[in-house]
Length: 210
Image (cartoon, rainbow, N blue to C red):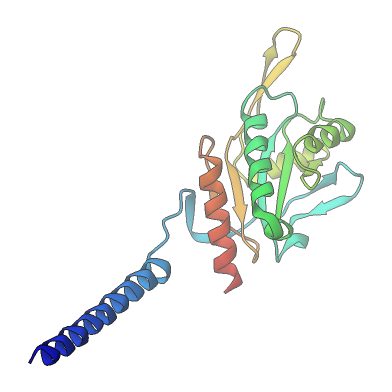
């Protein structure tokens, strides 16, 4: 009798353990594959074809946004004398690129000047190199730059001269996100944490890998 009870208890224990393990596997699988990811960025839905950007790279070459199709492209409009928004954004991008590791080659960060009078190619190259050697600096004629500003609804306003730093330039603070198909899919607003930006980019890259 005692042996029968002992056998029954062992069988019940292993059955319970098996059921528990199955529940753990199901819950873990749902957490990993079934959860809907909620991005922190401002999503553009439906995505729109990103306007072409044709400017000059600070290394002397020419740049066409469409030639980067197949890469995830981040476009930011700023200037090297910017006291706050631009260096803060570049520091965040520096962190993101360092954390992306092997995926860095799948992403391009493009910095379009809103202050071509002071942002010479040499100055832009040295400035961007302080943050990451792969960052792309763009400048060009007033006409070409104005076209890019208009296409991306970037309002650029030059302020009055003030102090030894000269004048400030009011400009858009968001980062435009263009997917591998050349579509404008969203923006990262200024102030979004670098960890959130990194998570969103990693998710977008994983989605585009499938």
